[in-house]
Length: 112
Length: 115
Image (cartoon, rainbow over all chains, first blue to last red; front, side):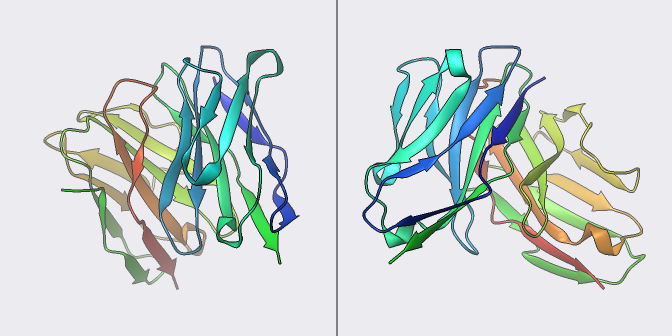
């Protein structure tokens, strides 16, 4: 069975500083991993996905994530935060049983 | 359609009444998922369909919850004898399947309020 742990429920950063949202996964199979973003009162949008190709994955809006099998991690980063990045971010795992499992989410706050 | 469509967008119901929530997936997507998102919580997996079959119903919270899918397309989530703790946003997603590396596309959700 697979699972996802998002290590921080809330992260606050100042505008213009780097963002790091942490995610660890557990899976019996070689998983696919995703990051989704949910802005207030909006639907879920895919940021990026890892599907066993390159371990460094680039997504939309300047976000990227690195798959580290040895650490079972898939942390999301962005070099410079923007006010519009304030949202909830979900790390997601999918394996060969077709189940899609979400982490509990990390709410990102951007300080002016 | 262009995306996953859910109806109604909002539903207020009295405790004890039954409700039906509808999901129209993206045309051609064989896999369909239902999730529940309560205030301040992550997405709780409810049930998954591959075609009209539900290989995994493990997330349904109680026997008051049921779901079906017909024609490999529209799905309905039914909650019987609603309780206040059922209040949440119910999200539906679809993807081409069965391929674990494809992304899921989400609807806007149905906000259910039980009073």
